[in-house]
Image 1 (spheres, rainbow, N blue to C red):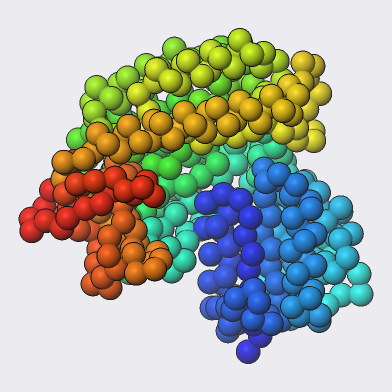
Image 2 (image 1 turned 90 degrees about the vertical axis):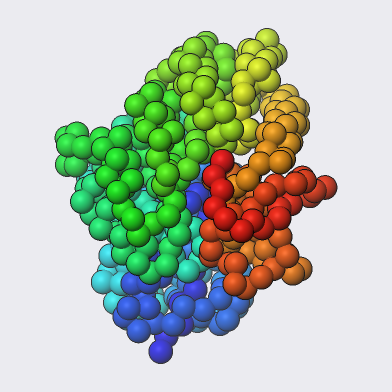
Length: 438
Ligand code: SF4
């Protein structure tokens, strides 16, 4: 039995795809092992957004070679689609597979006999239009279910459309079936995942269904206790979706909405499809309907043209915005994107300083949001994430909870009362007898 190991860089989508690919190996009789367990095959799933993607990839290949000198090393994922030839030239690489080919890896690479020179399987991204369903299972208590891939937007900083191609989706019928099967297998929470998840519904270049219709259909899936919408562009997070989630018992009161900048001038330069007013309006609507919903924000600092004044606009906008946490990204130039050749480049030291300022703001917001939950009842899904006798989980509105490890509570949704936020930033809870809901 050949042994295969996986290494994944990047986002939840990449993790769900690695998980699906690893199951296809197991179905064919391969044994999945840890990276250090002398595998016969290494599969490295790369990311184009990761800083120093090239350097990281080289390092992982080097480590793989040290662990198993004769193993087969294949590189897949977004960076493999963007730079197939460059990656194939890394010493020790046997094959590079692009966005469409990674799901056909087992057929394309046969019995994994090392070739005399590296093989590249990557067609042009504009020819990639098939949708491959994926989900992570066993790796985590929560399952990330991919419902959409690719993106038709053209944000000037982003390489994802070049790495993943046009927007395309699974059908509602398929997603509902997959959700039912996952629920029957014991999955309690499904996180809907995609590149531009809110754009769900395009099949073969034509819009056939909508994200709202998907949310409505999944709400009837009794086999799954919880659904979470991972990240939706503000222009696609309609009031009808927010209103529906407000009434739903299955969709959690938790939204992640990319903002990127609080300055309209920069939003236009980034070619985002909304201005700060619309964003504010969406957040206010959520707050009106669900006063304690978890709201996460993606924001980029140091985009070209971000003067100190423009940055302070973003800071002030976020400071006043009633959100729960920020994901702060420091802008870095990506080859072949319009932003990479823009003028008014922000010096690195300013990018880093601004990033630090927003991270501090995020901590402040998170602390405030968590404290607002003290004294409330909640339902926590405890995960298989045990550390020093402590287990962790999330409430409906995405407050991270810690409690003494109890194997009977893992992968169970438990009613609790939140009584404290500890110095590590976790909510401490007391278990309740009967059900409670935020
Ligand atoms: S919406 Fe913009 S940032 Fe998001 S994947 Fe599409 S192009 Fe990239």
